[in-house]
Image (cartoon, rainbow, N blue to C red; front, side, top):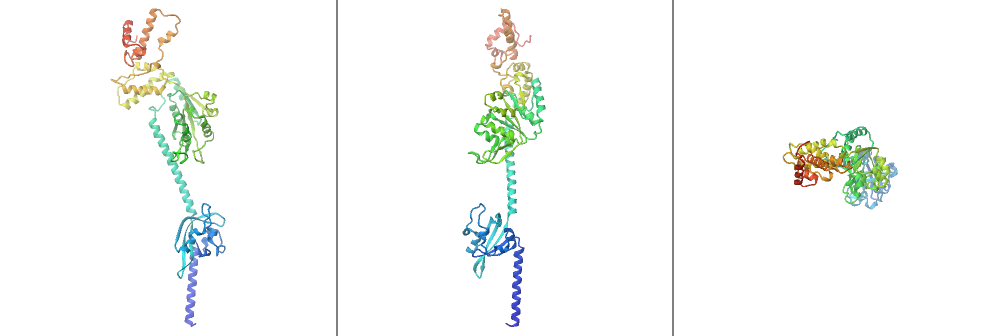
Length: 498
């Protein structure tokens, strides 16, 4: 070899070594894992990042079948056949294969989520292997899972807010026309004292009373006086829920839990979390479901239908009933332990007939509201109107009074209110009460005086009207012509207060 040729050869060798060292430095400094394969699937080289990610030493993997070591199993635990491996495919079909979200297996047996690209290697136009570049996406997966969890929580909150919004809209549509407890009677005074005592506590309350006495108003007042008032009072009418829907209504369900469950739904307990749940007509809860209700009250936990996840809640219970729950307990129609759990602080809601001095106040309140509603003016409650209302027994209580007032305003003409009250509900007059206390027959003069007083009472109740639906004749059950004749015979002056 000539001297010049020798020098050139040495320079070429030095350049080749520099290129190799440079490439080695590039491979070693790369953050991604990189390894090479022969067409037999054996490892030809491995950079430090690949060894670190996989948990092996470089020398431990050289000349080893990489698919068998790190790509043998899919993420679900099933076998990953070598013939399906995209890495091997690169040096068989000569194409680049880019795969996202697969797993390689660490030396300790744990899985590593990765994205990778397998690129074929050619030497003098012949396929001799492949180079694999992969990235550990564990951190990205954790971030994605955290985001999914956050989105799920947001979706849950959104569903709950939508459910609360739907519930509150329904409540607004069905809300009574009055907001406060109205009355000056001793009975109302006693209720207000009880509310003041129990509202600031978390004690369960059982409100007893006939239908239409305003039990929901009492429940609302207790809630409004509590520390839970920033959350809504969630109402459940237990008498209106079909037996097969009780669990779903109370505890909610997840999508697909049963036919028709098209999406997740929050139950009333979940809606009332950190607030108050009002169980109206609690005596209507089926006996076989009372144990589940008791568990929630005792443990503060429940599961949605179809869900294995346990939900923890903090709910105060206010229950109401028009039934004698104690008697139902004795008849084995209501669980005794549930009864005592609900009846921590009992409140009696009195019937309207026991608080007649509140009737005028309530009537004026309802007149004001309904006059605004129906755009009526100058409708005044007269003394005769009040007497008529006070002489009625009100089997439907305040709700019936409200309906009677509304109906009277609708049909009112010329500024007069007429109350069409059933005769069966009219209380016995004072004269009839006096009659019962007399144990001897009336003389003719006494009988005529009794008739006179009875007719005067009917005229007072009918505001002096003889005929018509609200007339005195209808109250007495006689013809208007007959009554007119008796008025004339007995010398009664219509409208007289004697």
